[in-house]
Image (cartoon, rainbow, N blue to C red; front, side, top):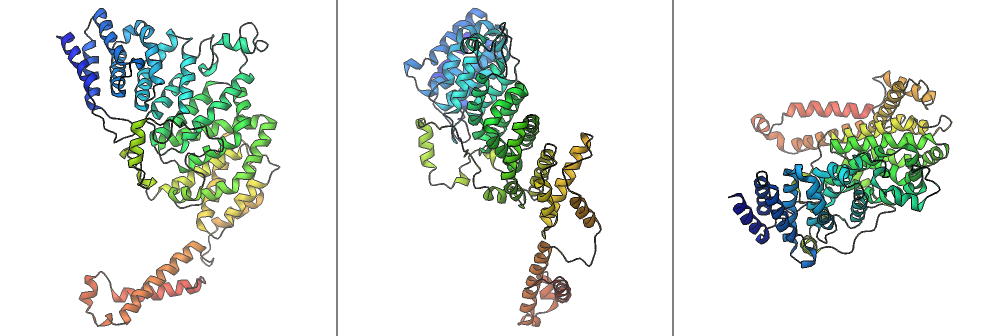
Amino acid sequence: WLEDISCRLLCVLALDRFNDFVGDTVVAPVRETAAMAIGAAAKSVEQAKLEELLQLVALFLDRKSKLRWEVRHAGLLALKYLLAVRSDLASSLLNTYLPLLKDGLQDEDDDVRAVAADCFVPIAAKAATLFIDQIPKLMDILWEVLLDLDDLSASTVSVLELLTTFAKLPCPSGVLPLWTSPLNEYVDLYGDDAQNGAFNESSQFLSDLLAERIPRLMVFFRHASVRVRRASSLCFEAILAGVSDDLHLRWLNKLYETILDHVYRAILLEFDSATLTSCKNIWNRILPILSADPSAHINLVNTITKKLSFWIGLACHESRSEALQFDKSSGLSLAAKAKQSHAENQKRKMFASKQSKIPLSEKITDHTNVHTEGPDEGLEMQLVAAEALGALALHWPMSNPLLSDTIEALLKSQYALQRRIGCDIVRNILVHFSKCNNTNPPLKESVFSITNEMVEFSTTEPLVGELGRATGSMFHDILGIWKLYNDGFEHQSVEAWNACGIDPNQIHQLSQLALAVVKENDVVQ
């Protein structure tokens, strides 16, 4: 019975053409359900019968036969569930079908690539143990695939998650860090650097490779999809944890300005908690690496000197949407953005052409990505900005007064928002320094004098500009209502006013109070 139902399900996989493009990736409920059923049936099938079943599934994946992409998609779905269910046979199955999975990653159709990457995730650890020499080549394929991805690509999340999975796996003695290249290839290229079969992590080979590949990853830090942003940040975090600081220092020296700028912007503009935490970890990991080397530390200070005023201005907005509009270079643009593929697959082209007249803000079709900004998110953005700048102060030289002068200017501002951000930065600096048992932060004495003065609140002190404008606006509205009342509505009965939710006596009292406050604080209307 299991053999019979499996054959029938294979027929369903071969013939089904129903696709739903409502989300980032294609949804094929019929093929997905049939593949799950085949996986469930495979639990009780003998190994010989399972191999026959897999041979039939392999026919679906023959790229030379020029089958429709739906057939290849169905075959990879079946293979994904078969490999996940029969993990006890992973060694023999991967030995036969690993080339088919690699071909799937290089398929011209984006949704087929997505399923091929998903196939690898549950078996990545076993594949890395059984096929050590194949994983570096697989990683090369994944990094090359990133060059072909764009805003509408369906496989972005799957490819990034697979890269993250392999980056977290420990590399055996015969492979360079992050599964970048087999050791024998490294020895052939850099024999002088290899001594007694060992390799030097600070080699020019690895640093050049990371400097070439990291920009491909940074492109997705401000992607429209939350899942893509989260996957890219987690992948970058895994790469930073995978090798030594000395190696990171070599490639960071080439990209430090771009990396710092985009990580800071990601921290400010990100609303997803998991992605924000990952970006904070990246920020806190990069700063010590750059500050440990004297020349890199000089580059760090010079970069921040150029960027600090813009970073502060980005944080001094009341919402992330306002900050995003202020940040003209946000989104997917990088100074050294990796090249995008000119070969869009046909179904995505058709979908994009239908959406061409829709505004960019409405092109996000995945409802899980639609985000309505809450009233407190502007405050959260300002707090994380202060936290990032507080961490930066740990690596700021005492001899450079720029950071202290910038904070002092914020504290002296007439705007309450800027004052509060300045106070938050000072608080975070002191918190970071207290954790390190360091009592000498790079702040002038005048900064602490201003904060002490702010604590001593005086009722005679003029209101700050924002509160004054708000009071003036309130006064203007009240006068407008009072004018309507005096221009003819005074004949209305009290019951009519109360029915509208307006008390004439309260209008008079509020207008007199607003007038007194406005005059006292010199707010001109």
